[in-house]
Length: 540
Image (tube, rainbow, N blue to C red; front, side, top):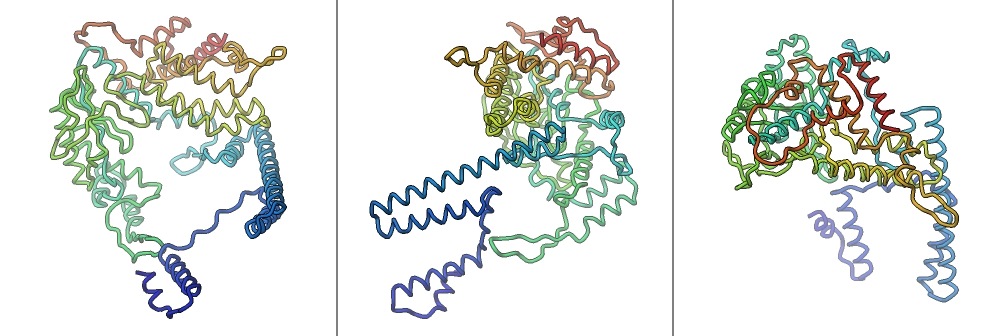
């Protein structure tokens, strides 16, 4: 419509060239008014005047070659093209060398924040964030002991939920008992919450009325606008939902969601799935409703949906999945409950950990290795560079690649196959870092033993076993009311089906303790000291 309006107002031209110029001008103006003009991408810092001159000379030679394609013009253009490429590569290499020098200087000075910012600048893949721990009065906690004490008081990590799910799956699968899982997702959760429900939930948990009034003031008079192309809509008054980007929005949403869970009778502090027919696990808005039977799960879901609807929350039918952990084959891939039709899946990524219906970690290990492989290739520019020292490369591996590979590995039950897989990935990265060895006139790759001697640390599979021992001590020191500890300590009673038993998580922990000669200690520092000794012992 905009193009038609422009062309109608233009005068009729007889010359075809003038007609084309007129059409081009009308089309350009209409597109700019509707979509807007995108700014040109900024040049890299190394693109200086010398690069511009080389590009200008190359373009000038190219124009002459197009106008008159003689042998001399073609040769001149090819030579100018080679010179321009050489200048660009040289400037880029000099910029990389400068960045690498700054990277090494930051590592030597142990300036971690500047170090990882420089890594982000070179690779454009890592975004470092620093979150300080503060007192209730807002002052930053700087002392190490105060930081650790504060962390112990408030720590509720995703590993707690993942470990609880895996322990439930492991124990019920061992005895052939079925569990039904509904991984619930809410549709546009932050935008749908009723604000009156927020204030009501805050009063129920006895938040001071002054804070409730302050919260109401922050959400009063909220307006919004929508940008379509180059146009901005009129002001829209927002009466429901939480403010996007507000620091207290996640806390307010959790308060509302906890109220819905309590009113649905699914309080997490009332036993585990081993002692009752249904329970719920949740971290933020990632919920897992667990039932011993299909009917139990459906009842729990219906109650939660009913209470969540009172708060303004609506279940997302497409993203909500159902998983049946049962030894028998699945007959149907659709599950109908409360008027919803959900997909029945064999695995689901819960809190970035792959949960499977066969209660097996093999799929999860494969996903972790794939994610770590992506992190490795994202940093390949630095790892392959001869300008970066081995010490810096090892630091990049330990801080940016290995944590990706070992996420939630504290909850794994390792088999010989999975151990070989994680160690194989580690050796691939280390061989790239340390490079080959020259023997006479031939080069060969480094042997496994040589890699471990250079790294001076145990294998990745051993590192995971040490993390598992640390997590075992952390859970054992928890309060008896914590869901994670109750799930780990529960002794399941039943009749096992025929066949060879799988390796159990706690049996592997006990085997590691016997192998190392460790005895359980309630003292955190003593347990940490024994794990450090185990690291040295396994590194030999």
